[in-house]
Image (cartoon, rainbow, N blue to C red; front, side):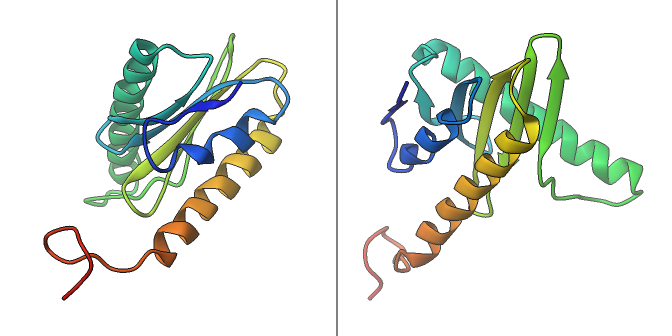
Length: 140
């Protein structure tokens, strides 16, 4: 399994697939648009996963803020456990998100470690990129 290069950051998914029993992963924008996905998913499935994941993140932020009686909260991760396995959703600091699915045999601690590690690498790479000008090019 490899990631499908639908965006410049899709490389982040391949190491996640190396965790035993991980089935699929998606890189998406926080508003639910696909940036990359693994071969286990069709494009239509990846788009569906991304849209649902974006909604789940929004609901998690709202729930966390409501329980803390605050106006807003930043979510560090969302874990969904089902009879089919685990979904782990980890947002980045620059507007993207990694979502990964492992079957019931996956070790959640290994999956979480790998996803957070890849999110950190994605952040390091984004920080290493030079600032952009208003037109998207190099600053003046």
